[in-house]
Image 1: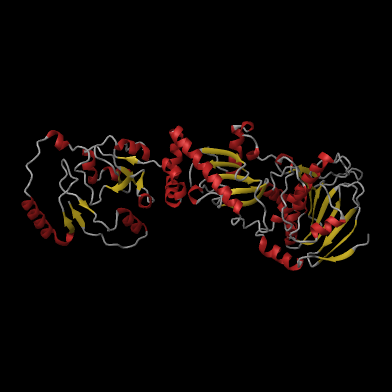
Image 2: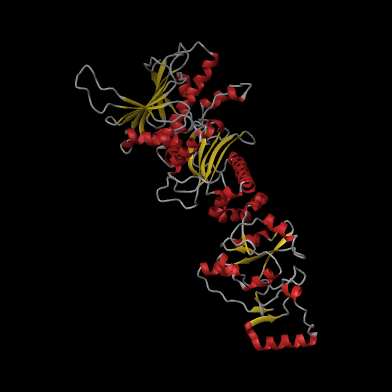
Length: 579
């Protein structure tokens, strides 16, 4: 075969410009793509070995090698995979959005899912990201077929390429990258090692970094040997059965991922097949705030597709109220679309999110119910997040409500659930509402004079002391048919609720005639004037309480006033009702 100059299909020059300048944010992504392609080729030949004994180099080990050459500003990537013929080179490297991996999967109709090979490159654009850092690329490949010859594909990233015969004795593919002047770091071992660890640490085959010798041997006939080190770990902890992973392994993985030396409060190791196949290893840290030494500077989970990292901080897999969680998610069903940097529109992500939320809330719910002492630190660290979930995610509200905990007037030093509060309602005659007070601190709430009549009647009151609590009660309104009512609301009537001490121990005074009562109320209202909205007969006060100022309906509540104060906004306090 004589080398022929051929023209790229699909307006390759224009598409290369898009790929290089728009598709990928980070230039180092090219190495992830090429290692993924090499992994695909190794999976292919591994699958072929199961049914075809007649192939080139049947005993060759399966691996990937990366050879940096800083002196010549070159980088070579070698695999012992299935290789390509000249026809396959033209098809796979000469056409954008054409993928040999996709064709191979379509032709592979194995009866069981476990017998199907695993591939990364479902789209044929990843290879071309190499031109972000290269001004010339050569691909030398020899197919697994015994009679096949080796060929060389050469391109400078313009609108043409050429394929010519080459010399290669072994099966597989070698990519020679001639680096651009502004990309010398990609021929340095430390940089390549860093990229592989970040993006390709869990590729199923060994990835070796082969660096040139640092010092030449003294004897001319004994040259120094290159240093060949395996860089990747291969085994993804999250894909292993839980029975095969030790506590030490889990702790080491978390520490390596986050550089957080505190024990996580909860670990969730999950896998599933429906509605989407996935693996996940998630952790609840001890605190929401990240330390200055943390490796995870932003919220979001590490997202893998077939053990290849495609997004370092994915915030689409969990809702905002679960963004405090750390961990990794890996999916077999997640395709890599043309833009691997913008995957949030993919419908598979929505399925994965729904599955993960269900699993996380389920595990938190079981922990809260069965091991409340272990759940308490999670609540104390992340209560604003979970309350936000009740507000923002009505679809999951039934799973979130059992996670809520409150201090109350009857249990100021311990936590009470809404279910427990509702169960206690039955012990108080006439009570049907859930009463609460909004205050800055539990101490301030416990000292409020509004509590006196409730204490006297044995009515428990929830203490709401976080900024989000006002939004919570505004959104929630009621729980299991019981309204949430603020104890400083003007319309509260406790005359038929509980039993006041005065009614138990003292003779009731003679009722004041209505005419005299109306006259007294009128006198007080005229005397106080604009200082009060109204003066009414109280249906709440009991015992030693003398007066009670409450907010009129429709006025700014305590929560709104707190928000205005936080925002340094001025507001007028409305006249109160005396009653």
